[in-house]
Length: 611
Image 1 (cartoon, one colour):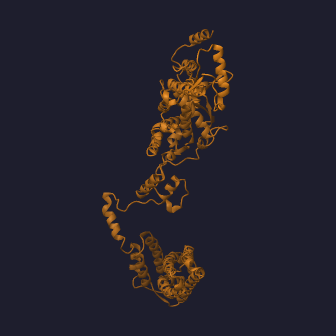
Image 2 (image 1 turned 120 degrees about the vertical axis):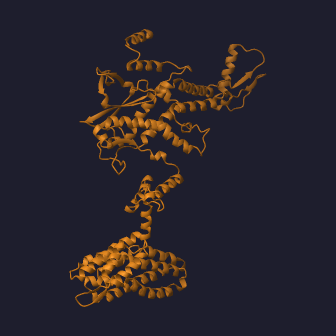
Image 3 (image 1 turned 30 degrees about the vertical axis):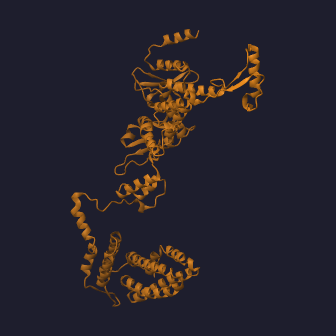
């Protein structure tokens, strides 16, 4: 009866070369046992641990990778494009019932074992809004009159509905004879999987029932069938099962002989290991990822992990990406540089030592900055200072060598803008309305000498401020009014720099005094007496320039002495208060005061120009 139905079904097939026929023959094949006597289909294969693990490894690793929309932007690389309509759908919720992980895990499992992964695209107008996975067994691929692909989806009621190829995600597996439908591992590896299942069943039988008798009872004479059955039943009832570890009492001439058996006797363990390796070969994954570690070491597993990404996982990711780019992005999107890609940086990461060494090389040669490195380690950026790219000074294009040498020589010369201002102001004497004389040349000479000892970035910043001050002097000399706020804005950065140098000198000296707690206060008084005079000398030119430009020339010395006196008094009092501790704690207390003064220079400068 079954054969008659089968014959009718075969006669109804118009060709053995269409999708419907192949699907039918695949179903018939799954019902037939392989050479080992085992039926191999999706369900039985997933009951075999090696197939289960290999499938989960590939599908869950693929699903766990971020799948994001990017856009190629000139001079900016390929940043993420979260504003694109499908960004959230791919990254988080392909449909209301599934997460991105579960959706891609499901489809990749179909793709690996069935050879095809299908998902219907639901659109709002032309924009994809949901992706709905469909089991491959429900899909029939046909061609319409124009030879375009049409996907017939069979519902539970048996009535199919047609889906255009443009609205069906169809990720094709390898070994595709026609380039349209793929073949899954289970179909191709039926004999290997069947052998593995048969081996597992043999092992279960071996330990459940015994491949050979576990023991033999020998008696003198011949027992008839009834006597032998009674003796076996009595022995099993008394000494068999979980309570079999009891003392046996043997009647008359009965003798007991145990027959041991181990898996190694039949090379059972070696067979199981070999079959795991075969399954790994079919799925294209390293055996150690199926927990077959007989030939793996801690030295080579890291490299095997990288090989897994490149040779095992990457082909599946490319299949996904190319199909999604083709079906979810319009030609306009692709023309505007949008593309869909998995982020695999996490899988490619090595151990901490290797990562940090690569970061150091990248930063040294200028293709990484601090914030980029922090981002790769999933850490917060450190602000705009972390966006700076650094390059070695000795790496210069050959055609620019003269330019670089000239620039290096100019580095030790007085800044060009400042030199120009000094030349124009040389021997100039500025008279304010009350007759006060301010030697402008002396001021600029003092500041120029100071600039030569600074780092280039600091010198250029200070130079720009001094140029502004020079312009204000010229404006004042010509009888024009000078805005006090503009004067303060030009002078304050220079004051911050000088106060910063004074504070660093102060903290360094007091830290030395703290090493000798017994003489700390005496040395503190001696230092501040000298430091006050030094501070007045350092600040006089700036304060004099400020008061001259601001119209307070008569108050210059008073402002200078009052500001320095307050600065010295506050510093001394802070360190005296810190000394009210145990001698062994003095250095730490001084260090805490110094750390709290990070912004003190700016505060002192603001206070001075605000008076």
